[in-house]
Every structure is written in structure tokens, then in C-alpha cells.
Length: 278
Image (cartoon, rainbow, N blue to C red; front, side, top):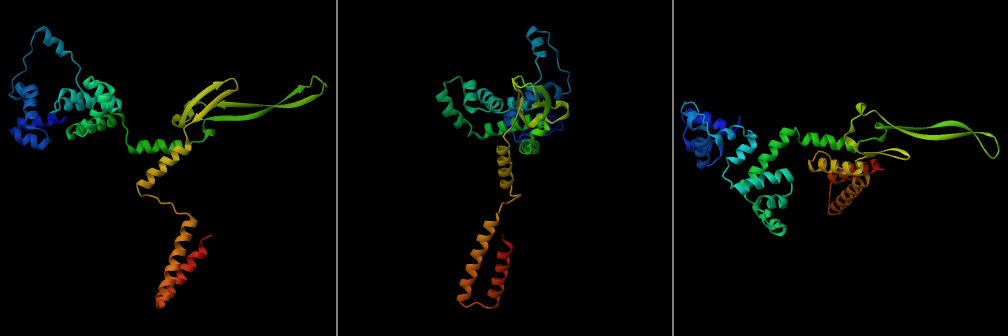
């Protein structure tokens, strides 16, 4: 059920325009537009009149809009702003989106698109459209990380077999029987492997070639994601040793200034930790 449909139920229950606008975070004019365009006769309990006018018949065959697009159409953005928001989501290219919406040259679009994206209402609509699209495609951060992990851990042996076979042949010059070796590569049945980590497969004169996505790049991106999330930290043995030595020097400095048993205990503890670092 869309926001407009939920608001309709409140309207039928007797809620005022202003209350509906505040509840659903829209303007008063948007609520009035909903009432005029969508609730008018239905809200009064009267059946919707069916016009036999030719133009009306054509409208009856109009494809029903996606709920997210319908909410955009019901927003307070101008028609061109609505087109711009849709194109930004569709193309992921703000300059081209501005060109498509306003029919201007590239340089003008490049400047104005960035300026238009500072509009809070447009940002809200773009974000809402993107979320609706990702939900429809069943894409979230977890599925993207899963794919990244598959690329990072991909093994070529999962997708292909290779080896070498012996064969006998007669040397034409000496007439002796010799043993030769012939290498071969065979792809595994695609129904038995997860192909997400494969970038490209080609078959050349020397046989099939399987190219995987860059594992090092995937690992780097996955590591950056984990580090940014604060879930892991990397500390080499050298870094631990340098830290322990710095603590030792600090403890010695305090001892020279007149430390007591606490400094002795600290020195022994740091010395022990240094002994553990190889």
C-alpha cells in the first residue's frame, strides 16, 4: 500500500488535510491533490462514473505506475525535476540526467546538475527511488559483500580441470619409439559451479581460457570495508614490538624521575611482552 493509499484511509476516517500532511510528511497541496485526483468520488461513497469519451478510453489502458514512481509524480517537484530524479536513478550519471530533463548542452548540465542535487526535496526523492529499486532487485549491503567475498576467495580450479596425457610416437629421423606429453584444459559443467566470480571465458586456438575477477582488488575492497566498520584491526609483530619499546623508554624515564614499585612492575611487564615478540 502506498503512502497515498494509507492517507486515503485516514481521510475517510475523518482526519483533516493538515493532520494528514503532517503525518505523512507531505505538503498540504499534495494532500489536496490526492483528494482531487484519486479520492474525490470514491471518498464520498459514490461509484466512479465511466465516461465513454474516446480520450477517456485511451486513459483506461494506461499502464499503472510503480508505487515509488507514483509518489514521485505526487510530489511537489516540478515536471523537469521529476524527470531529473528518475534519470539520475536510471543512469547513475547526474550530468546526462540533467541533459535529458532540461535539454541543455553538456557544460551547462555539468554545472547545474551539481547545483540541483543540493535541493533537499530532490535528494529525498532520489534516495527513495533508489531504495525502492534495490528492494525490488533484492540487493542489499550483505549480498554485495557476499559477492565481494566470492571474488576474493575464487580459485581457478573450481571452474576448470587441466593435466597432461602421455602418448607414443615414432621419431621420423631415428625410427625410435618415444613418449610424448600433451597438455589439456577442460571447463567444468556450469550447472555444477557458482559462476559469479568469473569475469570472462574465451576459447582460442590453444583451448579455453577462464578469466576471474581481480582477487587482489576484491580482497583490498573487502578489507577496507571491514576496517571502516571497525570489526578488525591489523597490527604486525614489528608494530607491537615498536609499541612495547616505546612503553619501555617511557617507563625508564619515569623511573629516573623517582619511581617506585609500580615502575618496577611496569618494566618487568614490558620486558616480558618484548620476549614474546619474535
